[in-house]
Structure formats: C-alpha cells, structure tokens
Amino acid sequence: MIRIGVVGAGIIAAEHLKHIQRNEWAELAAVCDVAPAAAERAARQYGGKAYDDFDEMLDREKLDALFICVPPFAHGNMEEKAAERGIHLLVEKPLGLRMDEVRRKAEALEQSGVITGSGYCLRYMESVQRAKRYLEGKEIAMVRAYRFGGLPPNPWWVDHAKSGGQLVEQTTHNVDLMLYLAGDVRKISADMGLLLSRDVPGITTPDAASVNMVFASGALGHIDTGFFPQPDGRSSLEMMGRNFRLTLEGSHLTITEPDQTWVFKGRGDFYQAQDDAFIQAVETGDRSLILAPYVEALRTLEVTLAANESAKTGLPVIF
Image (cartoon, rainbow, N blue to C red; front, side, top):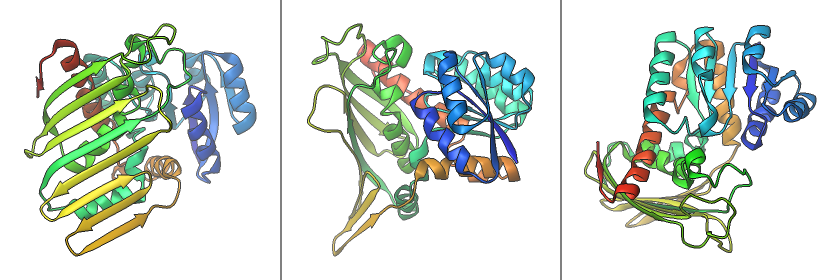
C-alpha cells in the first residue's frame, strides 16, 4: 500500500484526493494546508490526518509519495525536503514562477532518485495518445491553439506576481500539449494586455494574450488566450501537415485527410488515469508510466515564462 500525503486542500487538490481514495493501492495518510479548517475538512471527507505545518507532517508521517497542490508562488523548498526523505512527488502545474529556482529543484530531484510526475493531466487523455501515435513520423507545418475561460475564484490569481498570468497558470495545459505533440520550440514572441477586466479589484495580470512560436522542427505555431467576459469557455488545438489536419476539442479528436475523416470521442477520467499511473509507477518503479515527468513540465514553464518576458520587453525570446 502506497502511503500518500497531499499538500494543499483547494480545488485541484480535491481532484487528486478523490482519485487517491478510489485507488486500491493507495492510502491517504495526511492532508496539509496552511488553512487548518481546509485540511480538516479534506481529512474528514477523504481520510488521513490533517496538518497545517508541512515539516510537522513530514516528521510524523511515513510517506511514500506526496502530491504538491499549492499556488505557484507557495512552493518554497517542499520538493527538496520531501526528496531528501526519498518521497516520490507529483507536483501540480505550474512548478513555480522563477526558472532558476525550478531548475535547482529539478537537479535536486534528479540527484535524489525519486520518481516525479507533474499535473499535465491532458497528456493522459485517450484522444491525445491517439493523436500522438498518428503524428509519429509526420511533418507538421502549422500548430494553432486557443483557450478562453472565466476568471478563477482564487484571490491570488489576479496578481501577476503570484500567478504568472493565464498563460502560465491555466493555458499552460494547452501550451504543454503543443510541445508534447509538435516538439520543442526555439523562438517565442508575445503580446499581452489588460483590456476588459480593469474593473476587477487588485488585478495586475493581462486578460488577453497572443503568442507566436517557431518550433525546433521549423513548424510555425500560434496560441491565443483570454479570460475577459465571454458567453462561454472554449479551447481547441489544431495541427496541419501534408494532406492532414488534426483537431483536439475537449475529449474529441478529429483527423481529416483528403478522402476521409475520423472522429474519436474519448472516454474515461484523465485525472484518474494520471494519478493511477503515478501510484503504479511508485509501486512498481516503472518510470515509463509517467507521461509528464517533472523535467518536461519545467520546459513547458520555461516557454510560458518566456512569452511573458517577450510581452514585457517587446522582443522575441530565442532558446
């Protein structure tokens, strides 16, 4: 039985908590949150002991794995402390907001030998895995994506210094899929603005962003994102090459060729698939089960932070 601790008891932590509870190989040992009432509520609902002090939890509990589900500004040195004790880690996205700190963490995790995963759960969708298999050996010419959604309820989210903005904190999932399916990028240029949400109290983060990419393969890419008022939320990813177009919308995959079109409607809970894969990897030592290891999440963070830098300076970032 894999004894698991969870740090953070907010919205994303609740997803992991219910999936840990459903996994027959996992035992929720502890939940930690700086708000004691939140930790206690989660412990009552899902099991385990409630803590409001991370170090106390590590000292008192013998954990095999830890899920870190805290805002990007709040990581501190939790990853390093857990890794020193041989505790395997699944770290929610984004990994942080400073690349020097995240790189130091990545090096410490690598040296410790612990198994690491990240919260890029969309990689575990059936439709994404089918898309990846279809694209093997194919040359991609263009990648286009967008994500438009509402303003999250977290009070820290509108503070750009704490969230990194929508591209870093939310639309990072879409950027990650672009990298996962089309390969690495070598150039980023971006424009961002706070246009329609200036009435939101305390807001300092842009509500609209437009990003151009040049991939290492030479393919050209573009992504738009925003959280200004809209009738609904929308998200799509499209890739085009010689005689094919691949589109991902929600859990649906559409592949269009000159004489035929396939539509695949994905099934299953990709959050559950992600957590089950991580738990099985810890149980068996099989790292290949992890589709989004920490080091790849680091690269996605680097790309989104580079877009922020480009928007700030007006200059492209070349890797």
